[in-house]
Image (tube, rainbow, N blue to C red):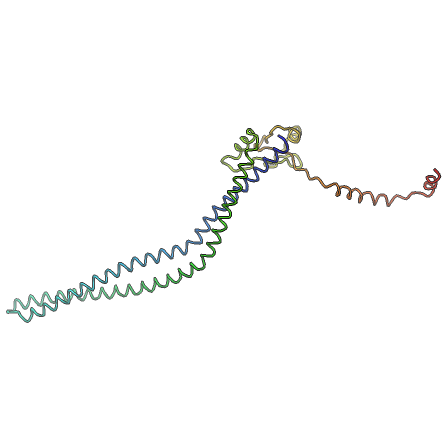
Amino acid sequence: MTSKERASLKELQSLDIKLRNIGSTIDNFEVELEELEAPTLKLGQEIEGLGKRLQELSLEKKRLELAILEKRERLDKLEERMNQVRNIREETAVHAESDMVKRALKNDEQESLAVTEQIRKMTDRMNEKTTIHTESMAEMEPLRKGMISEREGAESNLEKLTQEREDLAETLDADERAVYEQITSGQGRLAVSELTEDGACGHCYSVVPLQRQNEIRHSEELIRCEECGVILTPETQVVSSSNDLESGAIEEIEPIMSEVETPDSEIAEVSDA
């Protein structure tokens, strides 16, 4: 495996790590967005429930009002009948029916008052929650828009890196790519690792035999760690620039030269020569 192919595998691995991180970030956006919206959504659901209950109570109040109206009309007719009774038997029957209607009317009136009080309290509660919901929406919306904007940016970056990864993967040797995909499939672990300075696997830190180290550094064959199975590549060499080397050499030589004193006799001999 040439140095260029090794570099391509490392770059592919770097892209895969970035893609996993961005994917995880996008997933976290969904969770964070749900957590941000949860209190406001809950308030909205409570307000909706109160609205439905208020509709039911309003219908119940109308039913009671109609029943009260019918009973009052019935009492008026019974009073008219009372003026037309011809005997005690008819009078007793009218009185009995009138008392029954009055009791029913009283119950309906009391129930109507209770329903009216419920409607009043529920309306106050609904208005209070609506105010809180409005304030919560005003606070949440800028944060929500910011999170959505960040998520869209992450999705755009994910799409760009995915295409870049596909283009790079197409340039790799088919067998090497298959080995790489086999290592990373279903686990998302590292597939490529460098040797450490002391000749160990950079992934599991198991010591690699010297002969194997030499093959990794000089052979074009794809070599994997015998312990963890990752593809091993030579350690990255940190090479200083030529200027740095020259300046370092001069700095080391100058103190030595300054300490060396040339005798006058030797100088004279050199001059004569």
